Image (cartoon, rainbow, N blue to C red):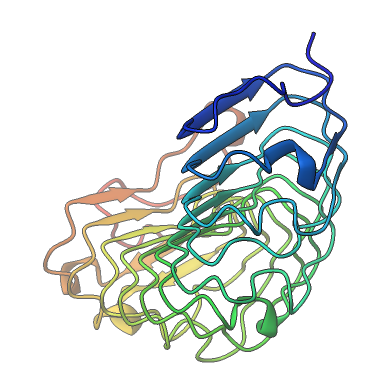
Length: 268
């Protein structure tokens, strides 16, 4: 089993995939010769630490995936041309203002299944081209004012500990198409959801009443998932003209939940 990055990798290599190794540490010298590298995937390798500036000199690197390792921090000084960064299934517990500094080309950021408790706004301030942000399976309990992500289309914060959002938190995401807040502790639908939404997932929360008349500005919404809540009423479904999927399913293990009729009308 490999315990370090092989030294004989050709300098012309553009894509490098390593998995199920035992490379505990990455160092600057590991990639010094790989000036053409565009994609690096190092997964399931027990990697615990990365020396500062390890990736900075890789000016052609566009995609970096380090999922299913033991990292506790975001790698520092990432190359400015990076477009995809996936760090899911690690042990990252804190985000810092400098973590994503200068990553103006980043389109996809996946840090799901880590130990993140809070989201400092400054951490995302450089990500002006970010389109997809995945924060599922962390330990988020609350969020403050929204980060400025003008091109964000996909936001997933499922399976956290969120019970509410500040007023107008979502109002700034004017291009958001997909929003998942499944598996949290929400008792109310967040206010000021953007009218650009096509799909909204609020299943596995603690919602009791849905007033779709308060959501009638979501004229583009096509999918709305509400299964496994504690719903007693859902009012005004006809006010969403493009709604094609309304999921209010009652699962056998949760038979006491969602005591509403299949057509979405109030059941007394």
